[in-house]
Image (cartoon, rainbow, N blue to C red; front, side, top):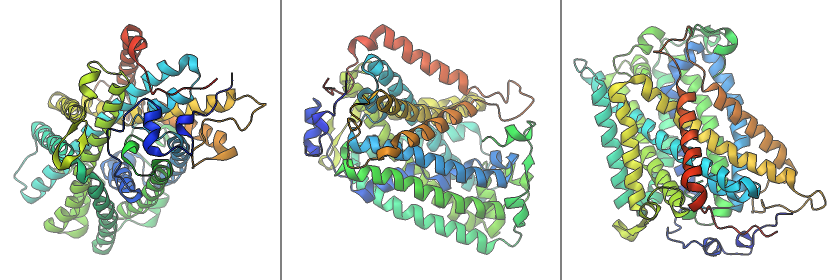
Length: 497
């Protein structure tokens, strides 16, 4: 039977009524403008600052040329993913994001189960990313302390406690400053871009021992033990956005474009300024980028100022990730996707009169701190959390693209214009090929994340991402069979037949 566009999402229906047509009350106030949402999403995907934490891995696995050329390719492929998700988000701007989109677009026979599994991977990815970012923020703070006081030795438990502090501050900001998130997003957009220019200009101007262009653009390096080929392989806030069907897609695409451009420039600048690789990789600060800043400026104060810019971005990103994670938990619980769903779907009025899913905020913070606690006992275990954050996101992005493709392919040939992707932003006839490109990239990336970083493989350098991903998939499947298939509703979209 032909799937018809749901009247709940007709372009003529005001966005304030869309959720009511789905059986939901508009409990979260729409307050995000385009600039606010752009600042929010760009902070989360702050590509240029995130690159600082993976420089050592990149240099060992092919060197600057592989990082730079791969970055260009990955940015273009990511744009295909972003464009596909923007089209779906334009048609269905709900807090459930990926799992809601899967429920709408997937074949009816598998929609609920596929939506359930997507929700589990989506939430796991968000919470693991929040834990990872709080860890990065903690590392920058402690790294600055070590640089300023060389006698101070950073211990693993110091990092965990600092990560706890970051998580708790982010939770307090979400509970009592939720009404300020939109303003904070705008401020962080300016801070992010300004920090980018300050960092790039400062290290290029101050560094007097730059690497030759051949090192940056031509010299292949492989310190992994693998062969050359292996060495070279490297929407949840929309219910609170004004005019989400038109502005959210712009925010998604612009954040990727700006992230790709700033990331490329930053990567080239840092590769020119990196000094002795051995000292950078083994820096007592625990943060190679801080060592590069110090080597470039020859100033503790200067290096700390530059590192402080990153620390602020990391702290703000944790606030935004907890906001996104709490909204995802709230939406999934609203659709009966979590144990004790009534508790996590509860909305309260807190500081500033804002409506906040307070219980979901506290759950997100608790889960984040639990993941950070793994670092108490094992570095390898926490490295898996870092990998899971990306794998969870990628798998939860892949399923909506697969659902969109299935929808396009199963659409009756006699009705080529019949589509559920009828929002203001549409890819038109290019939708299917762009979906395919994005899906293939996500599948490829998800597979390569499972490879160990070094050879020969030992228990210490083994990549346990595949095992962790399998556990998440197994848990979601078992809980679906035991209880999910009975109580999970998914978004209440009527798919007219």
